[in-house]
Amino acid sequence: MSTSFHPDHPVFQVRKIKPEEVPWMLRRNIWTGVLGSTSVTLVTGGVLFTAYAQQEGMQDYQFGVLSTLVSFSALLMLLSPAIETRFGRRKYPWFMLAMFSRLMPLPLLLGFFWHVSPWVIIACVMLQVAASSLGAPLWESWLWDYAPGESFGRFWARRSFWTSLGAAAAALIAGWGVNLLPEQYRLKGICVVFAVAIIIGIIDLLYHVEIPEPPREAQPQGSAARMADALRNAPFRNWVFAVAIWYFAVGIGGPFCLPYMMGPLGFSKNLLYASILSSTLPGVLTLLTLPAWGRLTDRGNPGLVASVSCLAWATIPLFYYLARPESPVLFMVIAWGVGGFFPPGFTVARPLMTRQLSGTDKTAPLVMFYVVVCIGSVLGSATGTLIVGAYGARDVFIVSFAVRVTAALLMLLLLVGLPALARRKSAATNETV
Image 1 (cartoon, rainbow, N blue to C red):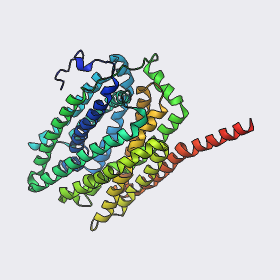
Image 2 (spheres, rainbow, N blue to C red):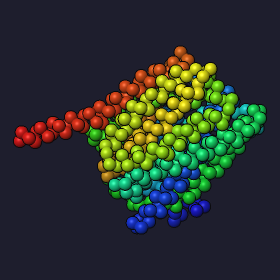
Image 3 (cartoon, rainbow, N blue to C red):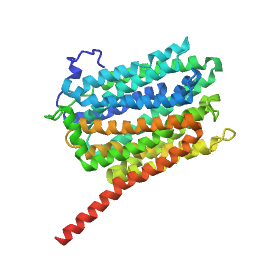
Image 4 (spheres, one colour):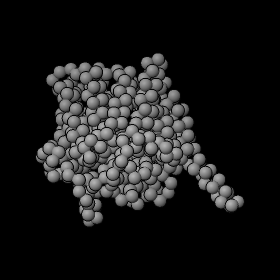
């Protein structure tokens, strides 16, 4: 475990990787991923964060503002190729950005003693995501350089299996523990969970950084030219556009799901039940389906897998719209069940599609993918915030449902329909020649 942050430390040096090293590197990637996923889920990714923010006075529109600003801050990843060029490597700048990201929730711990303004909460999360976003393309391109391409879908499914298991188990245990406390002490209990999660996140980084970084291929062009080249690739451009439209649709209703469930639907009264519904139920279904999604993605058409997953995923806001405060459980079980069964298909297909459609340059296409998708998320979150402000949280879900179905069908057309039509035209041309 590295203890030095100096860029000349041996752990940050680029070196060639021997084939026999790859298996342990993949295993290390998986179990450190479990630690990282657990840390993020417990701090800002689940029921406890929503309960914390609501107890500190955060309103529905502020959750929308948070989502919009978080998505907007992710646009900073436009700087990632320049950072890679500046340092001539990826692991060191990723590590420093990731460490900053893991430390940014520390001000939330002040809630143990004093009131924390919702705007301070928003600022902390925004800075956390900004640093994480700057490092994400560096980390993923580093991974692509040592993870075997022919079995990447199965590897990613296996990694997602264990990260989902760890996050679901941690959320259940934490929700159960906080729920045991008297109501007046639950905010303090959540702060203790946050502190433990931050420590787990730091441990994750200190072990993950020991995975070696292989030499990258030389990129003679500047970062702007590299990103422009990525969008000249028509199949890659269609993929990016389809996912951006999808995240626009998700952004309209997604940020308001947990606040609506915890507030108007009344689940804040029992954090254990809320944790079971929002973490354990989808987590178990994700664990059961991920291996099949991984095999299907490797052997079939990842574009079709992504499109079908999103089409089923699109139904979730409809169940939020149909749920009523007097009897919300059935529709919430269905919503979170769908959320555990179908989104993993997209989760597995997304990196494989991006990898297949990228060229030898890894970082620039990833940046363009994430940036365009973030723009979609920003516009979606802003649209959702306006709808909530004008009509209330419930009505935003029916709008999100309609836009999600449209986006999923558009994805199916762009990723499956148009390529199939192009193949038919090519075959007909070859027959006439």
